[in-house]
Length: 443
Image 1 (tube, helix red, strand yellow):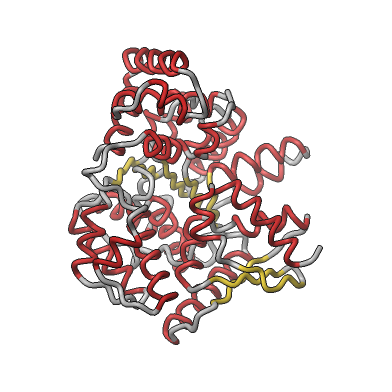
Image 2 (tube, rainbow, N blue to C red):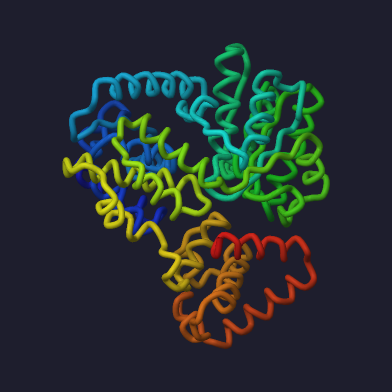
């Protein structure tokens, strides 16, 4: 295949994964400029694009290209615009560390450190616990379970533990893994009769970091393997750090003994940041990227983004990318224009589409899946929740709600609402989850 054909096929896979809006904004401006000896070079408009991709979809491009050519690849980036010398030096240093860690099978983001984590009242307890664990792994707070909403810094914090331990204890065997990746490895090990290899990999670690552990809901075999892995590490006083979007008692469809294991150490939550912390995050991020950000723009972003640090960073990356591409300085007028689709105006009524996106993000599924005809439990329950919340929080008619959710009729919406109402009445944890979602939608 020619390079253009490889890239076009890879882009189709990426678009299917992230959805049209994110694809158009971040991936469509990229180009594949070289593929040679297992190394792919991607040209991006500027460093903001590279940073965003590495934060939110670090393996996506490699996986898409690998699926297209049926061969493993390593992705490198180059910038279409000229880079500041100091930023280039910093990027080179981070890339060097990333490569060294990857050679050891450690896929940590080198930018996620304690030094780069802005501390405020909303996260100081979790940060202090994570720091203590990094200083004395296996001796205090084991396991450490950190939970909080989407985009509040859980991945940053558990990665900071990994980066600190690696710096202080170079002989330590460290592994960072998402729960989704762990599940895929369990499935692969069973399929290819390599369960002993899987056990050897995970049960001889000094530090295990598992991100988004709520993903193992309804996955019985994965839960069994994770339980025995955690037991083996705990008995040898090896450190375990877990993250989730909710506390252990609210993770549905996991075994009681696994939920108990999650709760045996210290549970620390990260709350949505208050205005002062958001402003500190914005100014730190701008300083790191040499962005000239006026105070009124910083305040505008901090006051409009209610709860999600990831969205704050997304706003800054978007502003920085636009300023870099056009050569125009950042000001309030430009910010309001560029971010108009990113920031929801409180005066604007809630829409069914916004609720669908929020629910999809909360459950870690794609918006397209909620609108599709899939009937698996992982999709059906979030779909019913989205219809219920749309009826409760918007002025949309039952027919309009059904149309937005993939063309369902009003009878389907009524049935979904009754199902959710019944579950809220019978299940306290489920009711609390619905209340959390309502807080996210109407902060």
